[in-house]
Length: 318
Image 1: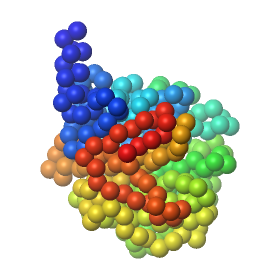
Image 2: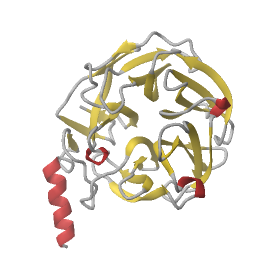
Image 3: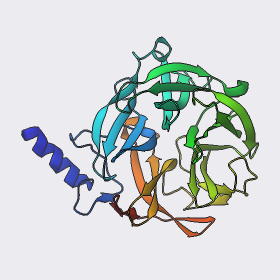
């Protein structure tokens, strides 16, 4: 009972547990146990009534942690999906930016991620894993360089037609390479295009709004924040618009990790998650949640808010 009371107090103090489903930005995020949420570089997926927050957890040598929530405000820890013990190749590796999609044909959840050996960033590989259950440990498949390209910061996107795409930073982070995946989502089928060669963009995240695809990226400045930019296209294969600024010059001191599509009974809204990195201590890094809105069909709007109120059932975020 004492542990439950402590957890509730911690959640209230940080603004994570409030009436009306309100997130207060700027503090530490705790789960329903009162433990700090460790899920950086994350991806989100909705399964049934639950949203799943899946991200990096390096604190105790654990790779990929899983949390779930029905309201996008209160998060319950569900376990570790990948650890150093999951496969021999992972024992001396780091995993970053895990993303998960569901394959309707195979009935499997498929995870793509950035793979490095712990010593440095020279491996520059993509890695793949799968599971029959979003809350159960994933089976690690392999790490590799898609079409022999370097692969670092990445994202994963499943389109409405069931096709899936992998996008990652290539050529020492100077390029972004877009790939179509095989039908089982376990490998790359085609290197579709290289976006903005020499543009030095990373931390990509994709979403579809109306008939347009939107790609959001950061610049490459290590752990330090910079200007987020976006582009749009009517086909994921392009042509893509020029890159345009969005938000302030530091993306409100964050780096993009994912934009969650929240489909409710009244509307569809979008929720930005950014990592607020601490360059001096990775484990002090936190998160920022902000609404992403559209002023017209091709113009996203992104502004700072101290508090964000979410009604996930109705799809309302403000």
